[in-house]
Length: 278
Image 1 (cartoon, rainbow, N blue to C red):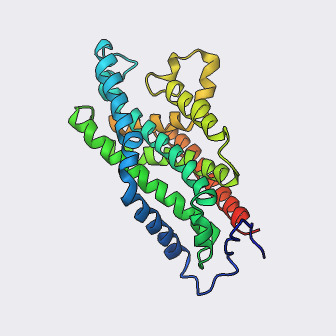
Image 2: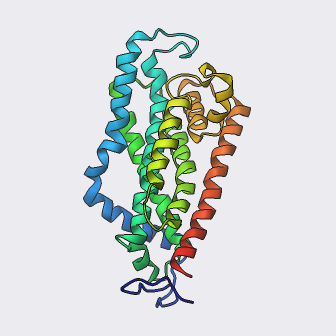
Image 3: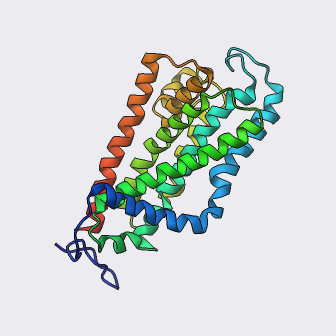
């Protein structure tokens, strides 16, 4: 078994010595490594993870929302309250996209910390799962911070938003897992990541039911919103926050998001192995 070579010939999984400590402990070691790095650099993520969704909530919910009367479109609620669960999901999706792109490529290309970890008994699959678990925790931290600010602004309808947080994290992971697989395959950042943010993440926020129901879109455009993870997450988050979840739609949304997450996780593990052990 050989590994991809570079100027300094990174070590290989076969070159490892010592014994593996089991799948879960190894994943947790990867998670610990991510946390050690993050606690030294967390300030750089505040704007994109917490401040940006809050600013959108203030600008759209308290600014433009002052012009929007409660109606059937807002489920009879103030626009600020109607918007808050959706912005929670949007924040999770944006954070997930950020964590699943450049940091993953950096682990292979610039920092090369994934190569270093591969020299230990930790396998590429465990590195991939540890990275995904770290993204999940990041989404949870950011979501809790957003909800705390939203509650201070009077945008939280009730304790149902705690379940909205769970759905927001699931939505972020449904996007993050496939993107991690793509990032693990890329040799350079090129225009791929820019295209992801410009042509997938941003359009999802605008057209997947964040600011208004997708029933207000022209009918030919509505199927496009249906395939967006953000729409499924927004419907679940609003349903949880407002206590309007219905069994069959909830099952459909959950099946779609969990399916994306599982497929993305399998692909991520394969891409990490293909990249680190060839």
